[in-house]
Image (cartoon, rainbow, N blue to C red; front, side, top):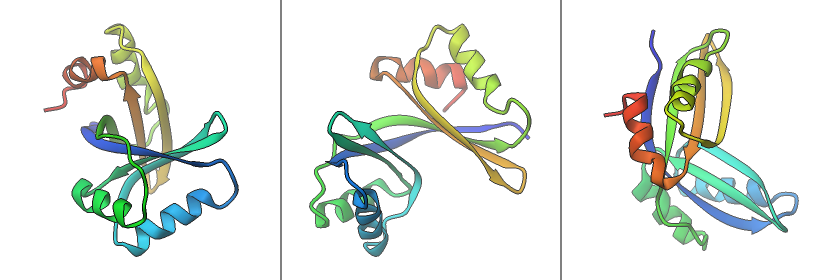
Length: 137
């Protein structure tokens, strides 16, 4: 089966870089009924950056506001899902490299049951070109 690649909205927020901050935010979003299809967190300077890819962006933004989170404006990422196999990410990464698109960040994971997923980010100026190269409608 071919990879399914789609363009998704994402948002980020900055939090103190200390134990439990991501857990606090994720629990609050869970309790508000916000569902995420992807999440990434990492240190950024003296803070932590939390990236969220919600299944329902409007519901997510509403839940985040109730929690008092200061969100970035809506941004675009690409979500890849497919059958897990050796080099599962190589095909789409090779296409991007050949098109001279620099991937800012990518995380991939085997999700079990023979499936994998990945989320990748490119510069805003490269979103349209990336969508075209990856065949995203």
